[in-house]
Structures are given as C-alpha cells and as structure tokens.
Length: 165
Image (cartoon, rainbow, N blue to C red; front, side, top):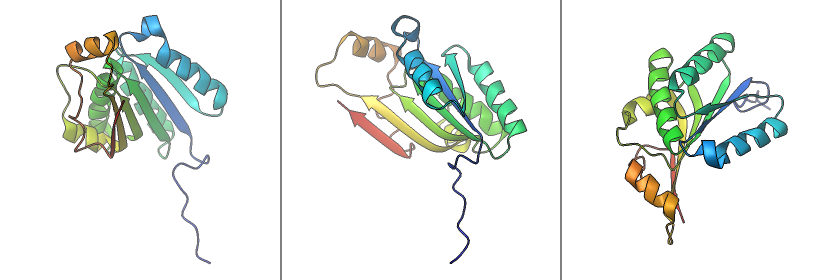
C-alpha cells in the first residue's frame, strides 16, 4: 500500500479559528455565542473573536500565527458586516501570502463597497458563502438590504454558495 498523504485538516496542523461579528452582534451576541461555544468544544485550537471594525487586528493575528506556524490552518468565519471585513482582511493577506486563509465562511455579507473578488480568491483556499433569502423577511433583512446585502454577488467565485430560506 502507498504512503497516505496527510490531510491539511488533520489535528497535526495547528489551527486558528477567527470569528468576525457584524454590527448588530454587540446587541444580539449571535456570533459571540457561537464563538464561546466553539472555544469550549475545541479547546486545542486557537480561537479569536473580532468585531467588524477590527480588520487590521485580524490581518495581524493571521500574519503572526502563520509566521510561527507556516503549515497552520486558518479558518475565518464571519457574519454581516463582519463578512465584508473578513473579505477585506483576506484581500490584504493575499499580498502577504497566497492562500493565507484555509477556509473563509461568510454568512450574509453586507456592505456598499466590496473588495476585489479576485483578491479574495487569491487569499482564501476555499470560500463558502451563505445568503439568507427568507420567504418571509423580517426587520433584520430590511437592515441588511439597506446596508448593501451581497445576495448573489459571490455566486460565481465562492467555492460553495448557498441561498437559504
């Protein structure tokens, strides 16, 4: 039998999981609660929570992690304006290191000005984008629409793009 190739998602690789919250998370704490649960479920992994206003800190954290762990795995999970911030951070990181982020997961990204989709693709190995398109919208959908909801914009470039009700 041939030698089996190690999967980069093995626990043999150090992992950094970054959660980036949107503007409403200060009130709703949705992303913060997911991050807190994640820290309990995966204590062996480095995990950091950021606000959507902390792009520079996200970039610095990833650069520092990869400087010390060149084969490390970086997962960036982001919601709403945090999705936009995460994509801008990935674009900046692409200039530091191609494919600096192993997995980028954006959930309902929102913003009027969008980063270059080409730079996002250079910086992220694998991108999953989730967009809510509820059959019965509520107030949060109105706020997202006014804020510049991305909707189908990432469809052609994300590795996986789900529109969910």
